[in-house]
Image (cartoon, rainbow, N blue to C red; front, side, top):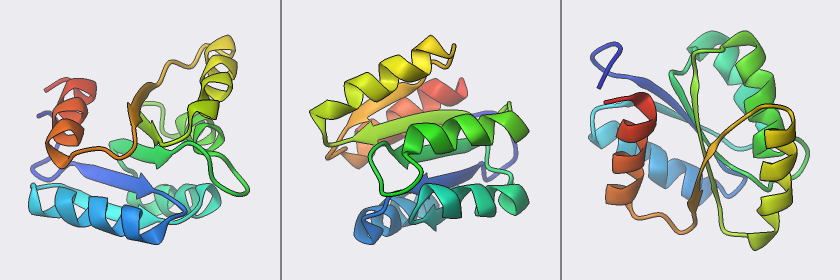
Length: 126
């Protein structure tokens, strides 16, 4: 893995149990992980935390995960993005992002921790 000894990861899901569980898994796997419970909260936290990776649910009230990822990319262009969703309806959101020249990795919920860590390494280039 590239970057500092403990890569910073911001996990976003409006279902707190999911965000907290993934954060705990990542922390025990050697990451400096923090949880946010909305797209707006994620952007606020990212301004001070400067994550190297954003892992976000796609469908959330308010700012969607894709909208948050695009806004985060504006001030942290090196941050890697990994989306996850349990809803089949997210495909149109992914296509809208592609139309704006954003290409994001997408994982299906529920995601097994081993698969999540493998995809993170792949996205981070490790």
